[in-house]
Image (cartoon, rainbow, N blue to C red; front, top):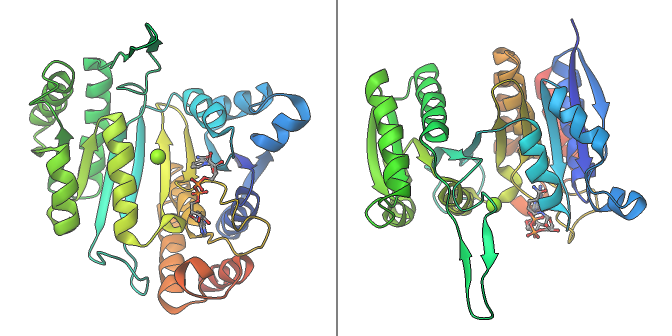
Length: 326
Ligand code: NAI
Ligand code: MG
């Protein structure tokens, strides 16, 4: 059976890096691609940043590959994550040989809670002077994330995982998060260590090798994974996966890069590695590995795009990856 992959390029460099990743997927598998619109351009045309048919496609496909949306990003990506009922955002931050990185020894994976915390959307303006935000933490969502984290470290033979939190201050909410995550890990016989999220920020800069897999509440995972992006040499390299119980959505961490959009020089690596995560999610482990190895080899030897100090185009880099796959 041919698997269907929904492809949403979006705006800006999304329209350049997503086709690059699709050509890599075409080279390693027999997939049917269904392209759908989202973002600023379709909003300008139709008044809707996320057309209902795009939402429906993402909500029924096994896997979706998304590029980026511009000013409408929040109106696109948040509902798309809901469409796949994504409870965890997997964000690897790995430095590659040959790429100038602040901390070349960095090799981390963030497993970020993707549905609640301070991003649950309960913000209120109570008066001229006062706004409030309700932070939502449930035992059920924390346990679901912890079960995923246990499977993740077992499948990949990690020793265990770290839990980043601030339960010393947010005793009720982060206390609940920490207790639920640690209790699931204990039941599963998976080792955990705890780290306060502010201390994590310092420790990861000084020595990222202290950590492997880091389980975080939503906001902490967002901020700390971007910090790690700074350690490994930039946004053009960071992939991500939004995983739900039945389907998943894959996307580079970066946005539409308006400063270089249309020039054909965007680094396609983040999106191609997101496609490798998609392959692995669908069970194509060998193909996923081959794609990762090809990207790694091109990053080491070149050609490289300008963000990495080279002068190659998106097409040159994609072509080099495809050549290594042959
Ligand atoms: P950005 O990630 O688009 O760009 C930040 C900087 O990194 C720019 O200098 C850009 O040229 C560079 N960069 C990013 N990806 C690159 C790549 N693949 N190759 C080479 N250089 C790359 O973030 P920014 O500038 O904050 O946002 C621009 C637009 O993107 C905004 O409209 C924002 O709303 C949207 N955005 C969308 C996201 C999404 O759809 N998931 C995520 C982040 C931003
Ligand atoms: Mg972010």
